[in-house]
Amino acid sequence: MEAMQERLINYFSRIMPLTDAEAAAIRDSMCIKPFPKGTVLLREGQVSTECYFVLAGCVRQYYLVDGEEKTTNFFTENQWVVSVNSFANQAPANHYFACCEDSQLVVGTEQKENDLYERFPRLETISRLVMGTVFGELQEQLATYLTDTPEQRYQKLLKARPDLFQRIPQYQLASYIGVTPESLSRIRKRITTPAAPVTHSPAEKAARG
Image (tube, rainbow, N blue to C red; front, side):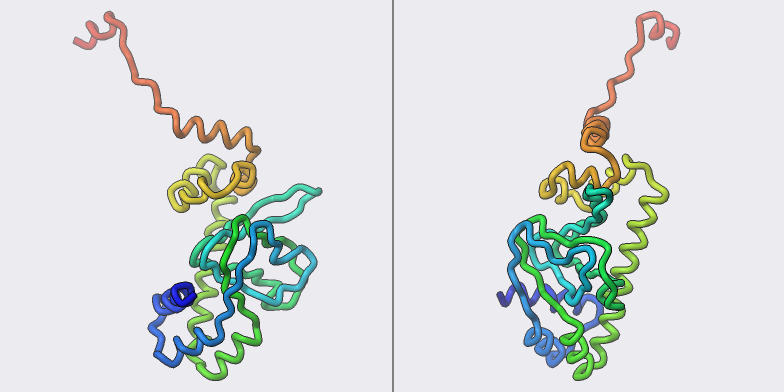
């Protein structure tokens, strides 16, 4: 458990060095819970009262559109799981969060945050920097859906997060990229199949000298 705690401490320390008192306060307030695979952390229509930091495992964000799940994000180790609008504005969520794997998550609440900020105002600055990172990642992700082809999104995901291809079912990856599972199979085949070598006939070779 101590090793798990240090992951969050190290995450904050990379953003801004913590004093011993700040680190101790975060450890004391930290609530780490196990969530089995399949656990739904947030449902459409619920108001989010918790945010999460992934210590181990994977959480999927998805929408229900005409009864079909549309995956929009995967959160793995050292990432925050926050329904930003619902948590900040106490508005009903329009999406779901569900665990794709058995997961260990730090569970945070607004009350816990405010208690820490009152005792250590500098932690609020760190929190704003964290939210800036979260917003930046969301903005970058949205840009890929607006500007990239499905094949480009696949290649970017393969480069940035190759572990997902071993952890996530193909139909969920296909939904995330924005294609059918069959189209994803064709994309994977095109990318993994080496191009045939160019050959020339004897006449062409002679002409080339």
